[in-house]
Length: 280
Image (cartoon, rainbow, N blue to C red; front, side, top):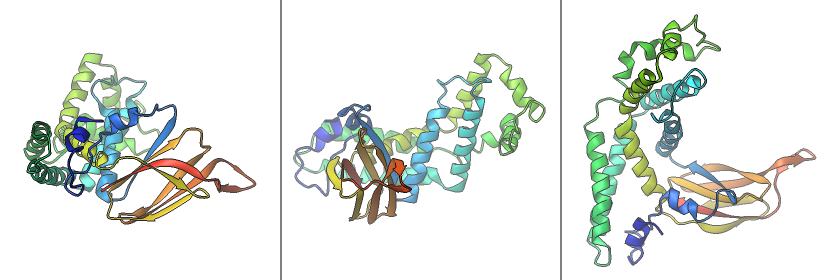
């Protein structure tokens, strides 16, 4: 059990203190080779968060960028910029962290809670909140970067990053790895505070609900619930099917489709026992 889960294990009021179980620890209970994990956002804000989290992994400055992988790197960078331009992610994360601060304040008043662990978690939230609060508009500095500006225009074209299309990029790829890494680190710094706040919010969101075993009879599960933000699903790797999920914050449907359809039938019609966590 995580330190957050331990912190609230003895709290009697479930509405005030749901179990906090970070994704990294909850997944470790079962070997990745034994399960396949899926997530489905039931709120547009969370959908954006998950996309940014996915793209962030490709942008880490520890990943060296060279002529063999630059396309993946710049694809991720420009997709992050576009997501941040389409929605005010900074404000959304800031509001969510502010809500966490209020939630922790309520928990701190409970007589059975571990005050030290509440204080530690509150400090993490406060630091992330303060860092995001001081940010200017995300990506504004990168728009002034000549290399990024020219390269971004060409990335939407099929084969548009040939050396004759973007000689600036071709030149950059022939600089030293130290120079390229320094530039990537500078671009990463534009998003770092946002990523840190986003990572913390997703950790707390995922941890608000434990996994529970359910059965999809005939490969189908439909439920109506209290408002939710995220579904987390853990399917045994031995099941020869994958879940297709649809729904909104108060109702969802999980249908399993066969990985190898037979006689034109894609539906997997056997019962499937799997785990699901309903994150509010």
